[in-house]
Length: 68
Image (tube, rainbow, N blue to C red; front, side, top):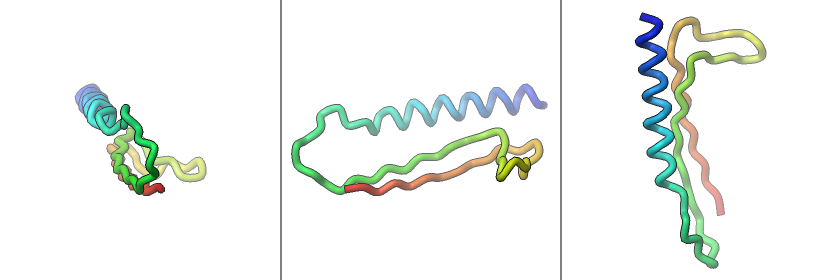
């Protein structure tokens, strides 16, 4: 069971990495524009101040960044 969870987690991380690589702007323009990005992190543990708060579970952490 633990091996299947590890494989699933690795596959999800690789999939999200491939999808997030497509959001890189290779042709940057000179004009400043507002931009936004959203990411999803999949982790095997959630550790807060040295304490493990998620025992044997997958942790999903969304992130939203807005810049100008």
